[in-house]
Image 1 (cartoon, rainbow, N blue to C red):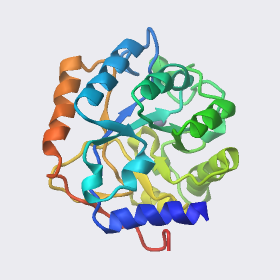
Image 2 (cartoon, helix red, strand yellow; image 1 turned 90 degrees about the vertical axis):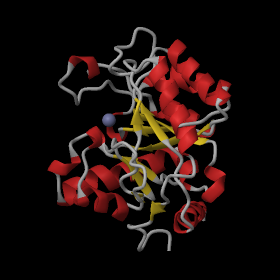
Image 3 (cartoon, rainbow, N blue to C red; image 1 turned 60 degrees about the vertical axis):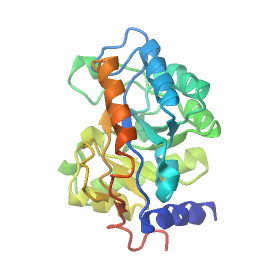
Image 4 (tube, rainbow, N blue to C red; image 1 turned 45 degrees about the vertical axis):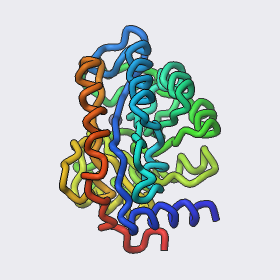
Length: 265
Ligand SMILES: [Zn+2]
């Protein structure tokens, strides 16, 4: 029932031409973190404080997708890729301080382990949140969403292997959380028509990529754009970016339900 409701409410918003709020994506937030992988907690706290003072409300991607038209005003979707344990320890309490929530895309086959999929040493050996931590965040209003089972380049897969990574990650998370998992994020931001179709067939409502938002373009719900926020970004650049989103409200095109057939019906 909940599944049907969640899907239906999402589809209603999209079919009515809901304007997708801007989306940001992070990876890590931790003291001494490599700037390429994310900001330190003090900077992240300042960023969230700025969003608050600009009148933004940080929400999950699931919530961002279920608003329609004018309700999206002031919303900003906050997302985290990979499901690092530091998201649990550092980012979540800061978000809660501002009454914000976020979506955390977890690699479901390696929960509680350390990152080993990257070759770049800056991305290797970082603890990922445990199943208990994921469940705890879900209870606290965060969206725990899927980011494949083992973080492969999905465009290199097809058939059963692709289905196993995409649909398998949804099943594993739903078993863990006991609730519908409706959003997906492509590892490395790599996607093509086949991976989009795999996400749709797996029952996801939407999938986020790492593409930047294009003004005047009707967005595809299986290729949702987002802005990367690393620790390399100056506070001034962050401020300009999000203030720009405020100014651009109302200029964005509605999300296109181009993959809607068969979903939530
Ligand atoms: Zn990733």
